[in-house]
Amino acid sequence: MNLTCYLEQNAARTPDRIGLYFKDRSWTYAEVEATINRLANGLRGLGVQQADRIGVMLPNWPEFHFSSHAAWKLGAIEVPINTMYRQEELVYILRNAEAAAVIAFPEAAETIHAAWDQLPDLKAIVVVGGEAPAGTVPFDQILADSAPTCQAPDLHPNDLAVIAYTSGTTGFPKGAMLSHYNLTLSLQLFQQYMDFTDADNILQCLPIFHSNASMNGIILAWYLGSSAILLERIESRELAETVKRTRPAYFSCVPTVLYDILQMPEDVQVDFSSVRYIVFGAAPTPPALRRSMEERFGLKMVQAYGMSEGPVHLALDPLDRDVKPEAVGIPLAHLAVKIVDDDDNTLPVGEVGEICAGPRTTGPYAGTFKPMVGYWKNPQATEEALRSGYFHTGDLGKLDEDGFLYVVDRKKDMIIRGGNNIFPAELERVLLTDPRVDEAYVVGVPHERLGDVPKAFIVLKAGAEAHEEEFKELIAARLAKYKRLEYAEFVERASLPRNALGKVLKRELAARERERRHRP
Image 1 (cartoon, rainbow, N blue to C red):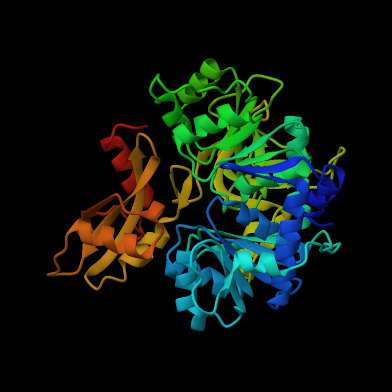
Image 2 (cartoon, rainbow, N blue to C red; image 1 turned 120 degrees about the vertical axis):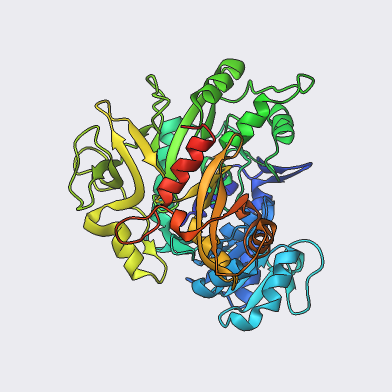
C-alpha cells in the first residue's frame, strides 16, 4: 500500500489528461508523475531514506504536492508545516520530527538555514522559488539533474505517510502520526459518500498545509484520476473567478470566505452552476449563511466534523435526508461514535460528554476504522487520546435519537479564528516570557466575521507598567500571524474568577465577554 500508487496508476491510464491547473499553467498526469519522480530521485541523492521525515513548508503551490508524493515515492514521511509559523514554532517541529530534509519557500529557508545548528538530523534544505541561500539546494536544480522514473515501494498499511502537527494544549505542537491505511481509507469513504467520479474537477482553495484540506483537495483528485485546480490564496473574488473559469464539482471552504462571497458587490459575476457540493466546517457556522448559499447558488452545503487525528472526517451531513443545522452531521459508516463521561462511561442519547470514535463491531465496515497511529514521540498523549480502543477527541458533544452528532464545546479552550485553530496556552506561554507579567490568561471573544479572536487578561507584577500594544507586538513577533492578539486587558488578581483550588475559570471569563458583546 502506498498513497502515491493511485497517481502512478492514473498517470499510466490517462497520461495526457490534465492532472493539475494552477494560475495559467497546467500539467498532464504524465508531467506530474515525471516531476515527482525527479524530485524523489533528487532527495534520495541528498541522503533521504525510507521512513525519514521530510518537512514541507510551502504555500498553495504545485511544489507542495510534488513534495508530498516524492516523499511517499521514497517511503518517507511528509511533515507539512504551517507557512505562517515563525522561527520558534518552525524549529520546534523540525527538531521534534528529526527531519532529514525540508522543502521551503525562500524566506522560510533562510530562517531554517540560520537555525541549522539546532537541527542535528537535517541533511538538506531545498528552496522553491527565489534565491537559494548558500548551502541550500534549488528545487529546479533537483528536477533538472534527476531521472524522470522512480518506482514507489509497496509499504505496510501501518507505515506512516504523514506527521501532522496540531496545536497542543500545553503550548507545544503534537505530531499526529497518520498511516497510508488511515489516509487511503479516508479517501475511499469520502469518494463513496459524495459519489465523485473522475469526471469531477476538484478545487483546492484551503491552505494546503492543513492535512485535512489537502486530503479533500488535490490528493482526492489524483486518487480519482480527475483534474485538480489549485488556488494560491483563498480570497473571495479570486475564488469566484476560478470557479467560473474551471467549473469544479466540489470544494471545501471555511465559513469566513462564504460570508465574503455573499457580500461581494453585484458587479462581480458569481457562477457556481458547476458546483454540486461545498463542504464546510472548522468554525461555528450560522444557519442563515448556509441557507443563503444554497438558495442563491442551488448547491448543497455539507457540514463536516473532523480533525487530523481522526483522520479527516468523523461526521458529515447526510445527502439523502434533511439535515439539522445545529448538528455537525452523522458519523461515517465505518466508525462508531459514543459520548462518555469523565470516567469513560457511555452516556445515553441527549447527554453531553466527550466525543469518542471507534471501530464498528458489525456490518460491512466492522473493524475498518483506525484513528491516527499516535502522537510522535509522545506516548503519554497517545495513551490519553487512544485509551480503551477509542479515539478521544477532547470535544464535548451529544448524539440525538436520529443519530446526529452535535458539538457543544470545542477542545477545551481552543479558539477557532477564521477556520484556524489557536490554543490559548501558546499565547500564554509567550506572554509569560515578559518579566513584567505575573499571570496571563487568553480566551476567545466573539468576532462577527472571524468567529472568535484571542483576548488576554494580564496580571502585572507589583509596580510594573505596560501598554496592550506591547503585548500584541510580542505575540506578533513570536507566533504565526493568525494567532495575533486582538485585545489585552490588565486586571487585578482578585478580579479573576477561580475555583476552590485557585485555578482561574477561563470559561467564565469567556462567558463574561460573550455576554458583554451580546452573542449567545
